[in-house]
Image (cartoon, rainbow, N blue to C red; front, side, top):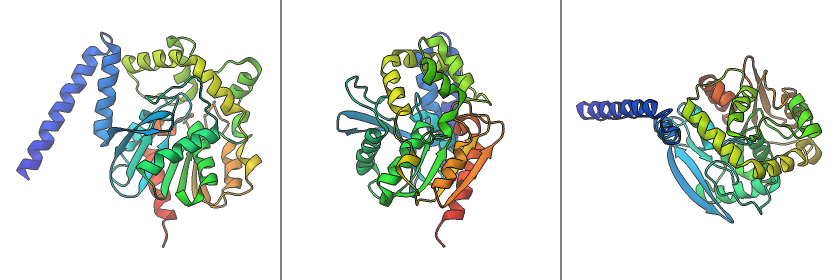
Amino acid sequence: MGTVYTVFSVLATLAGALLVVVLLLNRLAPLTAARLGMELERWRAGLRLKRVAVPGFVMPYLEGGRGTPLVLVHGFGGDKDNFTRIARYLTPHYHVVIPDLPGFGEATRDAAASYTIAEQVERLRAFLDQVAPGPVHLGGNSMGGFIAAQFAATYPQRVASLWLLDPAGTAAAQSSAVLERYRDTGDMPLLLRQPGDVQRLIASTTHREPFLPYCVRTWLGRRGAADLALHQRIMHQLTTAPLLEQQYRELAPPALIVWGQQDRILHPSGAAALGALFRRSRTILMPGIGHLPMLEAPRQSARDYLAFRRESAPA
């Protein structure tokens, strides 16, 4: 016991020292501080960074925990670290796998490639063939939820259950004022024309703003602005993709549908539309939460998911 205590004490000391370094570098060297801060959050969540290659792309991913695989897919403009904070409540229970989708995060960007929902589904399949080849529990937020639902429809034998957090993919969800304005004018807070637009992005996607230090906001703003041309193309492909209800009448996997009631990006009425599509589903509407429940309320979102998994487990 003494040895174990000593190891944990040393690790806690190192983590504390790293946090001090991050705070010192926050404004002096924001990109370095952001990288170190993300490493610290990954460590706290029990996640390790790995990479695999799929045709045309390298997909980095975070992995941690043991048990049945739980694969989490980020939304438009996001990356694997959108799930790092909630992962600390999940890795004690599951084998958590969180990839960067091609075109986002640290994954390969190919300006000549196409990034339709169907094509991202196939890239996710190629990724899972290597990392988790059997059935998985699959989750996704926003665009990632659309991809997860379509993956389940395309490869039902590969999906044990779904966790859909404010997902795109239905006419109701995509009837929000933000998307109506995008269709009319091309203006969209998820598309960063300059690094400072990150403040608008955060305000539009969250109701309960998570703590994001200056260094992380700076890093996200610079990356988003650099990706503008590519992400404009991907946004067009996302918003013109065939909707789930246009393709399927009923989907079989048990699904937990979660929606922030203050979501301004995708309309909360999408929850009912998905509930009609998934014959075995449970819906949770979260008051005071916006588009990113896993960042705004990670502990509660994880508790709700753990309860769903207990309730939907085979007798």
